[in-house]
Image (cartoon, rainbow, N blue to C red; front, side):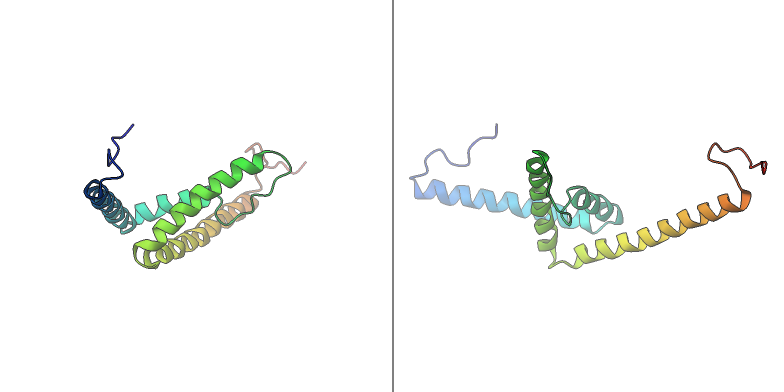
Length: 132
């Protein structure tokens, strides 16, 4: 467990020191996250975190999993806000554009693979179709 930032919350100086230390911690984190978002790899990872948290999905479920889904989505929404706050959303929007571009490229690759498979008439088990 981390050491509390202040031992006496009624001491104004201790509270000011704790506030200063918390601002330092927050600044360090924000600067590190900004550096992560400046790299293509960082944007891929952070985008996957946001998407896997279901930020853009409904959490509705017919059973108690709704609580789990809501908690995961809440985690994602917190990261979503942190990423957006870095540079007023510029790197976030770049992350989304890069992902859309990658999805389009990936879909084209999948379509080409399906077309090649159809041309070679392979069966599901990988053997060539004998026509019977």
